[in-house]
Image (cartoon, rainbow, N blue to C red; front, side, top):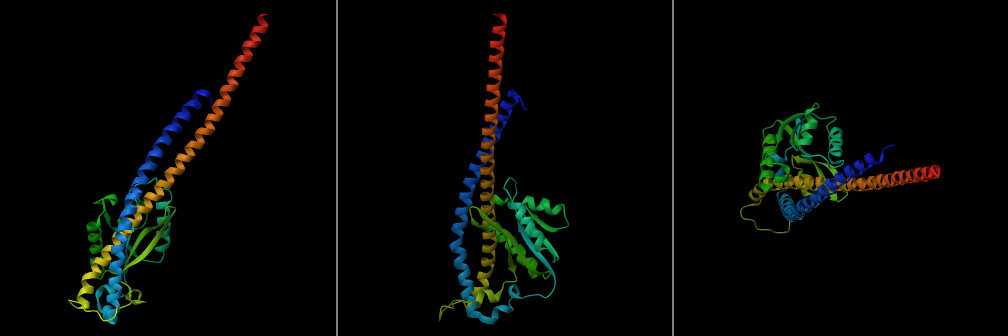
Length: 286
């Protein structure tokens, strides 16, 4: 069993680790609030543009199936954008993402665009075909302009005809304790899903015509989807990191309590033994 000096050192070491994990928890909480606020602020715009696209799709009817971004292809490779984290210490966030990725790609021929160093490292050690690793800017510094550039890259790859479909994998933020790895088809856009249950709004006058307005809005719609996927992933990452650091802090507190209990017991045993030695010595002298 460890001696008193060693126990004292271990208590100090655990206390230092506890301070670090508590600080990381506070940082994660602050950043979580920031990204959650950004995600919430973007939702009204995303919902409005999705509603406009849906209503215009209902007005155009079968005409939209002639547009390149809505045309299904029978064969070809798949392109996927995978969004992970740049850093670890975020619990099962990346592990769950990679498990979902392995299951999804089992029967597909896929090329990848990657956000996040963790995904790039994971794929680099396995048989993944990473076409592009996006590092500038970092995930934390991402904004709508960068998301629109990514959306245009994915759209260009699809229109060039090398890929039959484009998917996005991100982590959906459902609550502080629930973050779900999610696959969403990015291209081709499902015309049926847009038109289903759509309300054309009756007789609407549009200037210019509905087709022109629709074609102008579709790129904004795709950019918004990428931007929201990035924000949801970042929010989920920091929620997971906050939870992991809180658990680490609580575990350090429990370990400190246990070590202090052992330390106090051994210290009391040592004091009792010394007292007995003193008493025994005094009796021997007398």
